[in-house]
Image (spheres, rainbow, N blue to C red):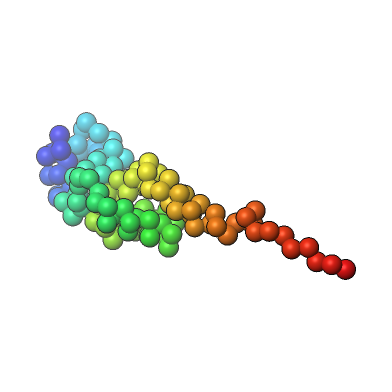
Length: 117
């Protein structure tokens, strides 16, 4: 099934997903596109993310927000992998960092100074 999709994509390119789905026969265009971008694209690296990549994702997220496809191009990883990694564990890590950094200086930790009239 994947070999068939690879052959069709090499013939038609990455633009005509509806036609690719019709030619494939077992998947529709959207499914073919998702399979390609998340599992088969030879330009991407698959497998576990490294701790360094986790740090890069956190940095990218703080700079550009949820632009997963841009991050995908920069890291050469599937956008879906990056998004899932962020929401499954990195967002919690970011939240912990934020709360640790702000707890020392939060408005509640500062004492109010009474000013006399």
